[in-house]
Length: 292
Image 1 (tube, one colour):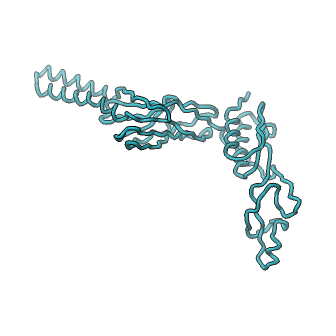
Image 2: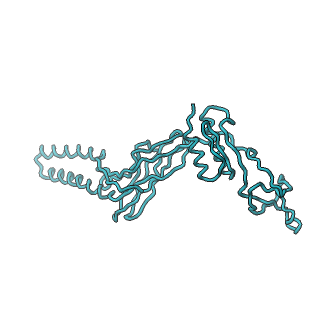
Image 3: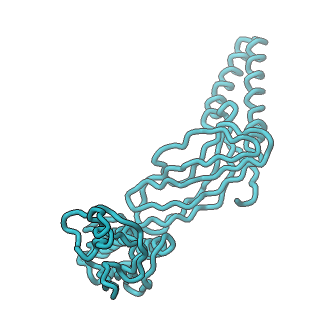
């Protein structure tokens, strides 16, 4: 996490309303020359003034940092915010906010002394592309709601991926040559066990040695195969945003199938690979692609 920041204070709307009430109480005390009215006025003003140092102490020692989030266009951005308390005292009624429109306010929580709490900042949906969440901060109006204390955090850089729309990726797009052994295994795959034979399974996938030992029809399953395909911009009709949405759908499908896949975009070609890092690389490329 970043360096610890000092809490910043600013009056809330409640303090402005209280100021109007105190002004009215002062006028009433002057008009009626009432010592009791003056006592009440100064008592309320003293309590209000004491709320500022309490608000500052409440957030002293907090560190705030945003985490990473995967979000698609049209979805609310559920940005994780980690609040760590370096002081020994508890931080009370802590919430997270930012300068962008919120889809829903975050609930206020207690951050124990020496502990940490993960909040979720729910931001309104955004279009695809890069989105900078500025003004990220942890806030609290403890104890009386008259002064708002805030601990700022570095701006978070969120990449919004295109919405995954369109036709699913057909499994026939990634044909793999059958291994020379003729046992139904694809090149590069490892044996992953048996499953019961169902109608439509190829006979060359059946474990005939097991059948010869008196076992029922079992089919060999293989994992980690070399299924590979290329997802091309030129294979899709439609405007730029429709193509990006379709390619996003195909990237997610290819990843769920366990395939190695490459991605061809105007001005960019990513070699076939697999895994979460490659998936994120492809999705970021789609999110940041410039279309005419």
